[in-house]
Amino acid sequence: MTHTILSTFALLAGTWTVGWIVVKTIGAKVPFAHIPGPPKDSWLTGNLLTVLNKDSWDIHVALAKKYGRIASLHGFLMGRLLYVYDPKALHHIFVKDQYVFEETEEFILANSRLFGTGLLSTLGEHHRKQRKLLNPVFSIAHLRDMTPIFYEVVHKLQTSMLSLVDEAQGGPVEIDMLSWMTRTALELIGQSGFGYTFDTLEPDAVQHPFGLTIKNLVRAVNNGGILVARLLILPYIHKIGSARFQRAIVDALPWKALHELRDMADVMHNTSTEILAATKRSLEDGQDVSKRIGGGKDIMSILLKANEAASEEDRLPESELLAQISTLSFAGMDTTSNALARILQVLSDEREVQDELRQEICNAHNEKGGELDYDTLMALPLLDAVCRETLRVWSPIPLLARHVRSDIVLPLSEPVPTIGGGMTSEIFVPKGTKVLVPIMHCNRDPKIWGPDAADWKPKRWFSPLPETVAKARVPGVYSHMMTFIGGGRACIGFKFAELEMKVVLSVLLQSFCFAPSGKHTVWELNGIIQPTTEDAELTSVGEKKLQLPLLVSLVVPALHPRSIEAPSHKSLT
Image (tube, rainbow, N blue to C red):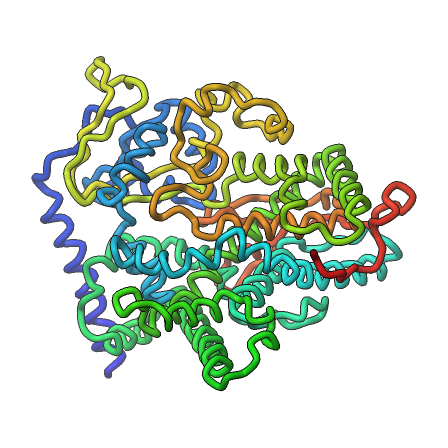
């Protein structure tokens, strides 16, 4: 009986929400109606589900080709969205007027439900307060201290992969590199972030539920029905009833995808609670923190100490410290593991670059006589170029959304044609407008990067970049690109991700050669770009398993004499 009542209430709430949106939309003036764009695909969802579809690569390419740096899209019902990657407009969106162009309400609410009140769930002064406390643990000085932890974890990966290849008499053997990159990324954030181990990184080890949850989370929240509910309903019903009442509604609805998302949130909350409690115990009991995993240099240990020493106005409540665990795990694991998988796939196709990069790494090891310290690793030119170019051409996050908090005029770098046959160099954007920013197009803009902008050419970084790159003033914190965005919401851990990628590549390429598996890889746009294959087995919700199989074999010792030696754990100096 209770189940039926709650289900009926949920249906009525959803119907009321749609009706309220219709009432608000009817009669509203259509914004930027003079800006060209495609016709709507649906009266209900406009173009939104089309451009957010996991297979929408060709749609985005067609939009950029036909409309250029700015287009008008149809949103839900009669709403309009602005699709823009003009660099001057982006400077205003992410830097100059960043507090007008804030994260969307549905983004903040969904993250709050999933992670708690962390960096991805806060705005304005609240966000700045959290970021101020976290900034020091992502400094280059702290990353230098954490580099040995990175090597220790990655050598476990190397040892396990050596055992898999040895079983195949040196290979080649097919290995799902996405799975290994995901497990490694989670263990890196576990040890360096929380003084906690999730995974022994042994071949037959059972993967931690926390890691499996984060790996599948983006796809789950972008599931068709969940996506519609998140965008269309959540902003209007999130204040109805208590948290306990809302949980009862979720439990009552006969919706498998929603129940799986609920269970994911539970796994993240329970694991985060366990990690925070363990860290607090070690500090409160006066234990020697140097005996903790990571030697007490982990982010959470330092954060707890800094929070205790902070002034009352800067101190974070325990609930917000708890939220940072799942927030940082999600931000630090999924994007970086998929970026590493992409690099390995590209190197498997570009064997000449792979061999040249391997030689650069081996030469540096021979010269150093041990592991490469932070500064040496960062200074390797081809390794740096391969990482930069891959992050430019294939940004792990392809699309961002912003919500306009007040009326504003958005300037453009150059005039664009209007539907009436005129030209305009600025656009009035009214309060309430949703703005979509295709990072992939800004990073590949031929007006900025030249006619070969879409091509993967790592050695473009060996020569001076085109003058148009600097003149564009793209507001990104990393190498004139929007991969880690810019402004007050720029990725706080981009240097952490860069170190992770370079340590993993510098260790693996000494021992292994990577080649295509022959299986057709499909990269899905799930909020984060993720790989699967056409023949992948189906998950419990009918989605193809995320994976990236590559053929892995041992490097020929005669060519690279250091490459298959036992892992060295010589301390860095």
